[in-house]
Amino acid sequence: MENHTKDSTMKVSSLNCIDLANDDLYHSVASLKQASLDCGFFYVINHGINEEFMEDVFEQSKKFFALPLEEKMKVLRNEKHRGYTPVLDEKLDPKNQVNVGDHKEGYYIGIEVPKDDPHWDKPFYGPNPWPDADVLPGWRETMEKYHQEALRVSMAIGKLLALALDLDVKYFDRTEMLGKPIATMRLLRYQGISDPSKGIYACGAHSDFGMMTLLATDGVMGLQICKDKNATPQKWEYVPPIKGAFIVNLGDMLERWSNGFFKSTLHRVLGNGQERYSIPFFVEPNHDCLVECLPTCKSESDLPKYPPIKCSTYLTQRYEETHAKLSIYHQQT
Ligand code: OGA
Ligand code: NI
Image (cartoon, rainbow, N blue to C red; front, side, top):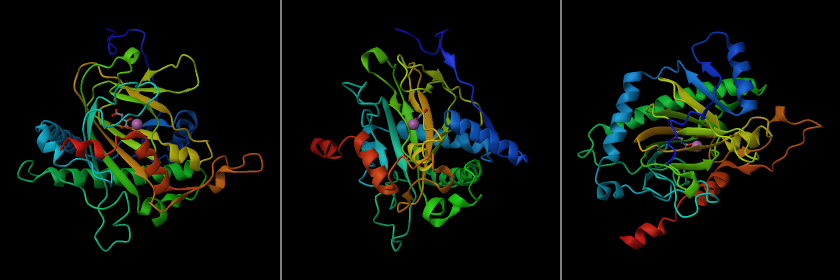
């Protein structure tokens, strides 16, 4: 079988790198804009999240996935899209993944709001089903801290994105946008060898649903992007991990918002038999946010291409299209 990491013909992508500690804002915004118009993938460095802490988060993630399946099933994904997703739960590319879903396990952690918050009963807020603190001491605290830190970095990137879109620097900071976001992190463990000829993927080809995703990985190769989804055959390029950097990509919601100017690019993960851990952090605006063409992205010659849609309506639809029905698990138990 083809060994994807040793394939000498494999193409490696070179992406722009945004340095959050760089004082030359003009340079950062120009580089971000170019990356966003080209493919919507870029690296982010000097984000202020300590490397030792990052290693700690990955260690804790490994501990969770190493638990027996019965223990993980106790925190099975709920209707609010929180909790454990078993192997094959998700199928991101139904056209090419004919018989099976993604060869990965996951664990979704979202924002928790107090019971008296108006968003409490909304699909993407509410409580997380945490693993028992006796089984994984300190686990919840580590994950909550990571969630906070990644959100801080997302807000900083949000400011640069606003500038790259010729908007006010604080445009996305408002409550109806990232001031009260839907921000969901997901621990992932990939196992096994992918075989595209049989429709077997670690993670099938997809573009992300939301505004942007901050991806941290353990350094094992696997992520690929396809800049032109309409090319035949499609050309896939590996995105090599850089130690300490996030790989950031823009999602479909931002593509809609920006009237198609900023790109949400197709990507997938191929497994090479080595275990691989990653942590995507999905950033979406407020549940109630109406995603409609941004004021700076339309003109007489560029009329809005997409109808306005509420953030939660759009997301709910995308999650339902890609995840198994929860009832399949309840039939088994
Ligand atoms: C995703 C994704 C890539 C990775 O979860 O949407 O694209 O490397 N993950 O885990
Ligand atoms: Ni993705």
